Length: 329
Ligand SMILES: [Zn+2]
Image 1 (cartoon, rainbow, N blue to C red):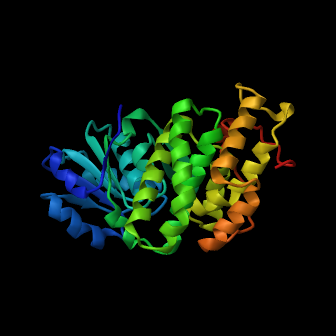
Image 2: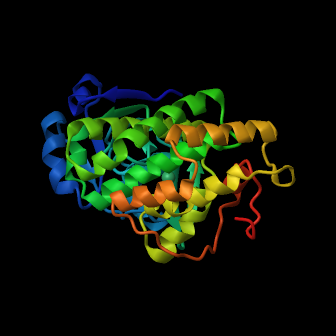
Image 3: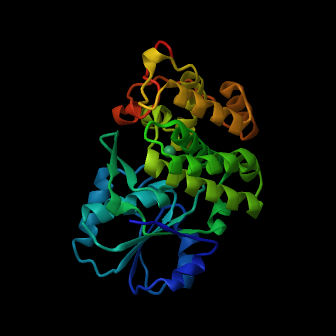
């Protein structure tokens, strides 16, 4: 399955053939999004009865609401990662063979370019990973990003940055995924701070692209330990995903940099891992990840919070090139 990305404008929607769209969008953004969507779509059916980090009950509620009376012929998800993930899970649970169009309104998760979705069941994070939920089309339009408050911009952009970095050294990384990740890292390095601080269209466009490329990268490579540790931080401290992930990224980079034979977890060997780590540091332009992220956090007003790790996602652990020894981490 291929994900086709349209860059530029939501008006691209008019080129796609459908008559009754089901539109998923966020509760908060609904009032702003509705008039824009109605300009381009006739008779949209809107659904927004779910929260950020969607819960299984909310998905079941949506399924019951439509009760198999699907009189729509396409699904459009317009929102941040949670909205796009919600649409993916809805499509999957109903076994719908309809096209899914994703229009991200944050520059961060890259969910529009991945075949996975996250939801919560009894406060425990679950993920769905299936090729059928890769959006068929993504529309990357910067006009939605300007409504985002600074903290949302910062946390979502950090998610993109961390996803690109983790992807670059992931055990499942390939030449193709590293090419996507490299471009995403460069774009984050050069645009993230200005994107958070200003409303300049240029930075928004570059960060939307960075987030899409990071999505493409992790769709191949998956993420690693910074993500594995983030989910319990998100539930316990009620921190946005990108903020939770970013709290671990510097420590993870420094940890992987010190890889040794005893902790090697990548079949491609120790020299391979070391070379990839060196490339990341040189791409970012630092030799100390702690200093780099401390400085970055200061610039975009992100607090470095102390936390306890209660749960680590085992699948993502396996994808880190260095085995996790907590005492050394
Ligand atoms: Zn993420």
